[in-house]
Image (cartoon, rainbow, N blue to C red):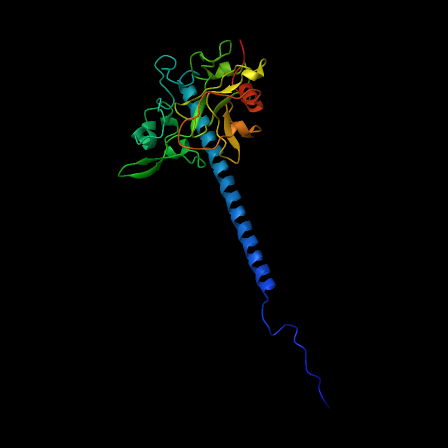
Length: 273
């Protein structure tokens, strides 16, 4: 009996160009998905690391106040209340190679250091800013966080008619859960230990709003803030003007009329007398 020849399911001619193109496209898509997933996980880890830092720092502020009759540490270039000096020893950051930018020992003179004696707590994992130090190399800057300009300070010269809270008990006038204490500041804006919030245009004349200091936006366009009651929130900014690109240098005192993000931060800063 004659047996008919079998038919192979595959061509003997191998891959066609179309087959090869499809395979390459598939590999590229898979690689892209893997990179995207890895990047998303990295960003999520950095955000959570920053939130953990803020919780630790907020706890340090409250422990300090418990030891000092309810008084917050000093803020800005003030000496604080009585003999209480600045929370971060007035370390003024820029992009020069001076040790104050990269040597963590500069933090040890701040009155908050005994309550948060770990340099990693003071640096946001998502903060990209570095300085180049001759004969040393690139070093990260030592601090990513700044304090509410209306807490632990004398009256703010930019916001007459608004309260400054020197004690934890005073924040109850606003609500400790509503008043931000510290946040991660934009690396091109951070200098002293204060996040200045200009209250101009808060309730009226929104066209007069401006950024004196910029909040951070390196958590996928968001910043992390801790509040006086100790809880932490992540705020995504709505206005593109709130999210300038990071570049070594300084961005300060920029008009931003009608910016809803400024109003939101003003609402979490202080209240009028």
